[in-house]
Amino acid sequence: MAAAFTTHHINGQNFIPTVHGSDHRRQLGGPIRVAMEQKSSYWASVKEEIEAHLRLAIPVREPFSVFEPMHHLTFSAPETTAPAICIAACELVGGRRDQAIAAASALHLMHAALYIHEHIPLTDQPRPNSPPRPSPKFGPNIELLTGDGMIPFGFELLAKSDASDEAHSGRILQAIIEITRAIGSRGGQCTAMGNGSTRMVGDGKGGELHACGAACGAILGGGSEEEIEKLRNYGFYAATIQKMSKMKEDEKIREVIEEMRRLAFKELEHFDGEKVEAISSFVNV
Image (cartoon, rainbow, N blue to C red; front, side):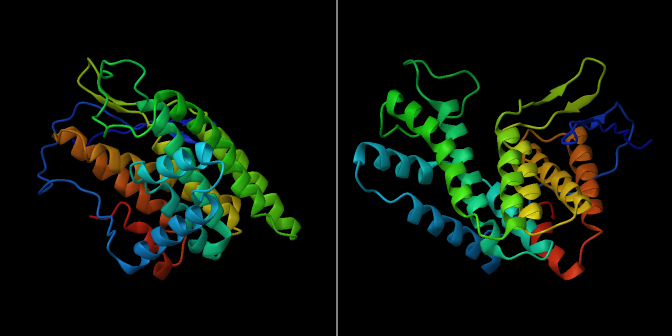
C-alpha cells in the first residue's frame, strides 16, 4: 500500500506532508542526496555574482568597528541555496539576473543574521543540539549587534535597487514583504509520531527562506500569481528535501523525499522545458 500524504496550507505558504504507517517496502536504491551541481558553470556564475554584489555593498571600510564584523560574518556563514533559487526563479519566468541580484543578496544577509543569532555563544556551555561552530572572531555582544544590523541592511540593499519603473517598484515592495514574513516565520522539525507515522514540518530558517527566495525571484522577474505560487511551493519542497537528505536514513524518510520530489517537479510542469533544467537540479538525483 502506498504511503498516504496530507498537505496543509497555512497562509498560502506552509506545507506539512504526513506519512502514515505503511507496508510499502519498495527498494529505492542508494543514499538519497540532492544533486546540486555546484561546480556547474551556471551555479558557479550565480554564486560569484551574488558574492560580488555583497562585497561591493559591504567593503571593509570606516567605521571599521561596524563594517569589519559585518563583512566577516556575512561571508563566514554556511552556504545556503536560497539566494541561488531566487535568481533561478527570476530567470525561469523570463526575468533578468540583475533584477533579482539585490533580493538574492538580501536573502543571504537574512540567512547569515539568523545563523548568527542561533549560534551566539551566550555561555561557556555548548547549546544542546547545536552543531559545532569555529571559534568566533568577535565577541557575542558584537555578533548580536551586527546580526541585528544585517537585517535592515538587507532591506536597504533591496530598496536601493528600485528603478524609476513603477511596475518594478511595486515588485520590490512585494519582495520586501515576502522576506519580512519569511524571517518572522516559526520553524519546524521532522518528528517520529507515536502512532507510527512521521510528520515533516518545514524549517522556518530553511524551508520558508527558500520558498521566499523562489517567490521573490518570480515576483521580480514579472511572473504571474500562479507562477509565483508554484515556485514558492517548489522552493519549500527543495529546501525540505535538502534538509531531510541529511537526516538518518530510513524507509519513511526516503518515501517522504520521493513524494516531495514528485510534488516539486509537478510545480515545474507549467514552465518552459529548457529553462527548467537549471532550477530542477535543486531536487534532481
